[in-house]
Image (cartoon, rainbow, N blue to C red; front, side):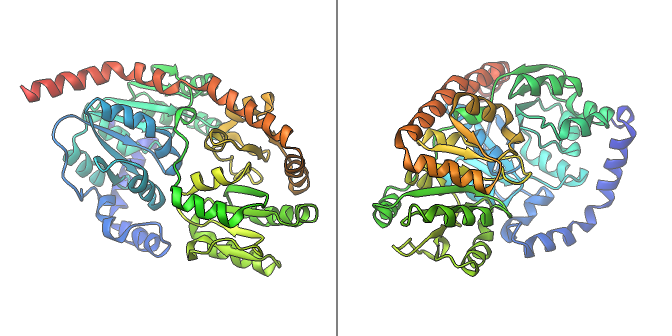
Length: 434
């Protein structure tokens, strides 16, 4: 296999093999940063911490929370076919989400570091029957070793961002050697499909964005009732999945709006909950009365900003607030997924940097189902209009819901494209049962 690889991948394989002894240093630093689970660091070296289920096994890999949640409904449909699932990801937050949101028979492991030795150990133990890679997390050794073992590989919900595409075009031989190992590429949009084809993917089908078919996030009824009681009679807005640099802007928006809506409560949900205390301190230093959810605090009548720094509770806050600002969009992060908020009846406002969900936001904006703003002033103005005009807000909610419904269907199209592989697994299972 190695002789047909471009020089870049041959060099990568040698360097990643030579660097394996240094992973202890990397793990130590990541442990101190809270980015690794001390009890499961062996998984990063390919050591399994649970037994392999019997029979055919579908291995699904997603980088982090967004990718894992994108395939939640797909996993449910595969489980209904009595196929066992191994789900890998690379972040502590995604592992926590899997533990909270997925059935216990979905086996989660951390993806091994991309060293040939660790990858070989991982594949030797798990021996997947089919590998589904989600979106764009393409680790060279993982892909090359899977192909060498003749594991069928499919890229699902494939996305190639406008940032990544020109970079990969400059390394055309490298990306072509990786994408060419996939049996099938299921792309989110026609644009993504064109980009994957241009970069060397062999069989590309546009199936749509699986995130449009994901069920709305759940909410604990008792916790929701406590929040509703604590905020009754107050206008509430949510800033969801915010990143560094955005919370200060949201605080400015709150201060501006509080002049007209003095009982306003602003809920900030940091994308990374570990930042919660630092966000709260900064807001308090700016003169805001702040409550912190990770300390089991509920907002009081005096609370101006509620920092919801917990995992897996966005469903609570989307149900609490009729207006949601989607974070990661006032800075050049690329925006966060607006679909869940829309499915739970929120009017959505966002900044200009939404290239991670460009097609979805373009459709929403065109239909009036979401509104783009350029900064703090226009964000405050738009939220103020919706707070004052419930009819206008409801029009945005209805338009957003219509777009999400119209763009749905990716789940069924993806399952149809996967059917030949699933049929082979059913044959294998039948032979084993016999």
